Length: 195
Image 1: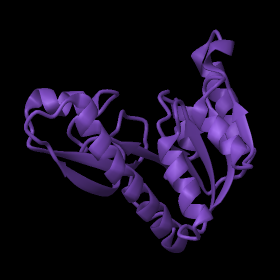
Image 2: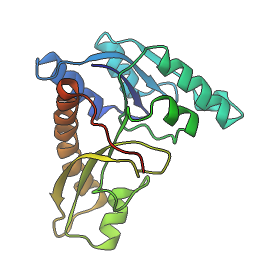
Image 3: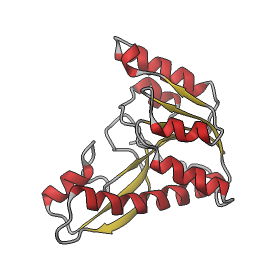
Image 4: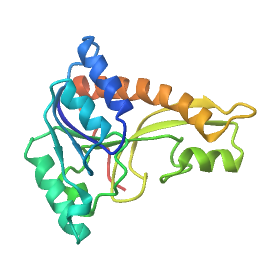
């Protein structure tokens, strides 16, 4: 299975994928790792590991649709089977979603459909849930609304802060991502009817 990974930050999920590949625990081909801004540590990690990288800098475009089009073309140039949003903090448009329909995978630090959006951990804590977790899902045109592939629960402990809970969720998120990619590489992406 050939994938392109998109990152916006440190790339900790990406690093777990790279480590699993290196250990022989995951048989996938990372065609490239891309980012929406320069000097992204996730891209630096990938480059240091010998993977091809690219940046389609959001700030280089005055019209958002032009950036989306450039990102779509760049990712498509690698002919990926799957595009993985791994901490990619930009919302892509319908053109991108349609180009990679059913093949754009996202991770989210909450048990969707609860607490979608950029602040899933904070929102779960504010609501007072006793169990949170993480989700791997197929991204669609909504915000964290696509079909769910896998989930893992994480208990919310007394005294948890956003940071402490998020760190425990990240551990499960990395494990779940590797398991999901392994399953997709052997069984393929399930045929899920679009809502």
